[in-house]
Image (cartoon, rainbow, N blue to C red; front, side, top):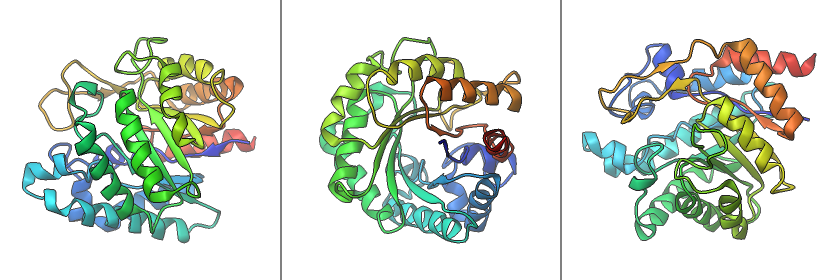
Length: 292
């Protein structure tokens, strides 16, 4: 049985011209058009998503601080949780809400992970803001072991052992090279074991690297494992708000995505969705292929 995750939020908002690429990324829509965030959640649910992820990837002090809004991070994170809960409660099939606990600085940058004594309180505050609205916590796009430990620690402190905890790492694009930090998948799984994650995933990574990672992950745990890849081609030095351009891969169409999803299932994955550039049409095709 496969559980279907939703796809990317920020990229989908940009594709619909509902939020600009830079500055606050997907958090800008919470300020300008929260109803459109609800609309995107609803579209993923209509496409078949059984878990939707809160639009809290960039409701973090470091991003909001660029526009002098750092003091609103709890408010906007709470809003992201409330919108996702509204969308899930209106669904015509059971839908869970995953509270996103993202990197606290740039994605893919283990060198910029804040010190533990700074990171854990921020993660705790994010989790507390999301807690009334979410069914599980998702530590996502974790680029190194320390980052995932900090996020998982805070999630367990807030949610206890009754609220499921998923941990999702982003991998090196060199297949088999471990996390973005170069640390091994085995060491990453061992490091978060004390928090007893309910699922382990890989996200915001090419499907090629994820395929190798899933094969390794399946040998390391009996818990559910999964994947939600991106379509991005990431150049050196890229960040969410600088002038370095990125783009979506043209070779990762819906048919190719389904081929990878089938491969991941065969390797043991039971949770599959999408990240940047994987829109509702991909999720609907996944749903239809599973039904067939």
